[in-house]
Amino acid sequence: MSVPRLGVLALQGAAPAHMRALSSIGCPSAPVRVPDDLDGLDGLIIPGGESTTMSMLLESSGVLEPLQQAVDNGLGVFGTCAGMILASTTIEDGRDDQHALGIMDLTVQRNGYGRQRDSFEVDIDVDGHTFHAVFIRAPRIVSMGADVAVVAHYGSDPVLVREGRHLMASFHPELTGDTRIHEIFVAGLQDSRMQGG
Amino acid sequence: MAENQSAVTGRFPVKRGLAEMLSGGVIMDVVTPEQAKVAEDAGAVAVMALERVPADIRRDGGVARMSDPEMIDGIIAAVSIPVMAKARIGHFVEAQILQSLGVDFIDESEVLTPADEAHHIDKFAFDAPFVCGATNLGEALRRISEGAAMIRSKGEAGTGNIVEAVRHLRSILGDIRRVGQADSAELFDWAKRLQAPLPLVQELAESGSLPVPLFCAGGIATPADAAMAMQLGAEAVFVGSGIFKSDDPAPRARAIVEATTHFRDPAILAKVSRGLGAPMTGIGMDDVNERYAERGW
Image 1 (tube, each protein chain N blue to C red):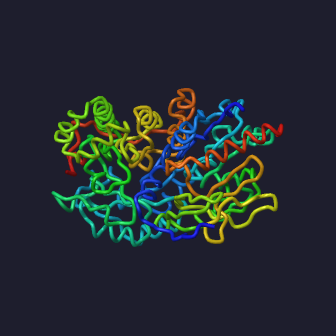
Image 2: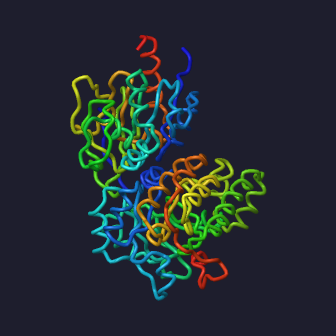
Image 3: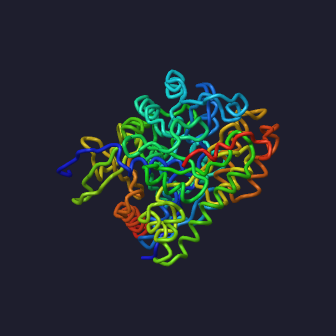
């Protein structure tokens, strides 16, 4: 199976850290800032950052609609933190003009775990192994659709969820040098291509 | 389920992590909740609360201090994005107060009047992350050794003149490239010349970059200024007087946000630079009465 073609949305936020993580598992990726950058991609990471800023820049850069079309045509999306907020269907405590792309059926509460002074690190269980997760002014998943599967919890909250080729995390797997969650995303893209999805 | 899910706060990964999340963005100086709303509406990734913008501090003189906590509370209540605030260099009690207010990032800033002429704040003693200014690599590494989670090149605040920011960015990034070329014996000499801890110099030589994000501040007044800082290698920009001392702050703020994202695309930079009205007037370095960048040790 060939390596999927990957992009990282680079309007604002931690795109460089994701590109380094992908490169270390043998998957080169390109930054996405304008509509043409989406051409031919199999997967896109929407990184952490400030979701209100990214929402505004999605509109001004003209990427918003082509991105939604690409998702309809099979693009897989991995959203982390602010990226998960943008990919959700409903945003609580966001700005009224903030876009929810509806890529995964999630209701998320922005800064649902508090301000920076409440930002935390915790070990969570991912597929039977410990993963050190960093939460920064993180969004909380309030509810999700029936087709969304929980991959990891923190307490009773889902914090890593998947639906088909899409993966969402309330935390930052790009910050710790542990690439297992990036590998899960890439493997999911390869599975869906094998199934002709 | 993991057996032991005990969360810890305030350690370096979450401090540095927030700095990473601000990358590619614009942090705007604001002095009121109304200005903070304008900044958020324009796409700022964070606002910096202070009592006067640097251009006014420069004009009025006197001792510049931390903002009134009531104003900071008002700004925190007005916006949903992170709020930063400035403490005087060495003034650890101002920093304690800012932390207790729930400020997301503390700027130990040379723009305010220094409170200590020898010591910076011990930033490891705080759960809140700190950003500090630097004019050169040695200064940046000393601040990191004290616990700073972000470095900003100082530039010369309140001038609307990019020349000092360019000098400081070129100095820091140029020396990072030079340290990367040094052999292991030369690193001892680099540590001595930079007056910086040897382990940090060795780590820098190995990784080729600072262990925390490097942002640019001090003199950015136009979208082109912001894009130049980014092309030189800054990871994000602070804009102080440049927005609210211009003719029409809201469109200028938004244009600087777009320029910071599309910093390598001259066609987009031309588009967003059109029709913004007059930028802040600015001053030449020969007319600067006091160089804030010289504060800090």
